[in-house]
Image (cartoon, rainbow, N blue to C red; front, side, top):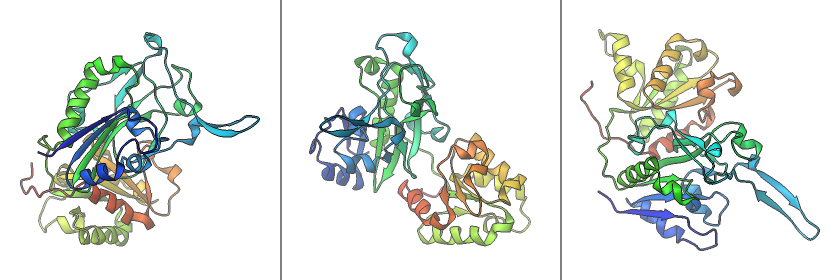
Length: 328
């Protein structure tokens, strides 16, 4: 069990929170659950917001020019409070499937102020808001769901956030109360989470074996346990069964996305199985136009092969697991 801190509606003013102390608290083993304006991406507490993995969304901004000044205005999606026609769904995201914060949470609706934001690599998305055109909002909200909750490991501690919460009715919603209770338990390390034998299952085409080995070698040098089929399959083993067990016992999957791997039925089966299992999936792009990724992979944050060490560092930051030698 660890100490936990809840931040809610921190004023958007310089010095509103002791950012350095809070980040040190998390990195040394503490936990923080932040709500609403505490994680407003355009506020003054930028170091804390950046540590949450929140990034700005310029598609929801506009330049305003007045006679004596000009400034950038952030446009929010603001519903008519109390009008059921302006409620929009809050959906658990596939990448968050199985996470303790989402235990008992299904799609629900809120009438809430929302802002647009993006996420950094290494952050686990949990919930999104599908605002669409249900309320008056910038084009950015009509381009697809906006992430409104996520979590990450930071040093020895944990950080989770939920960016809605402008209206009092949200705090009475049963789903929000469940999310908040789960998040407090998670950042306080009170949840019994499954451990995995591997930190990463690396899916690749045999044509790209040398590049896959480079990722695996660097990952293991960083203390990560990487499932690579050529090392994990012993002589005489049933190949398909070892792959299946490797997938079940890997915390995340990365697919080395190349023209060859997109044509491989086994690679498709591996990352498709990871999608069904609710695992985080990261495409590592090599000699491939990202626009040619399958639709389900386009929704994921990808990284260029030549920057794969950044991905491994993010994976390391999400927490190296304890070994669990008993395979189901």
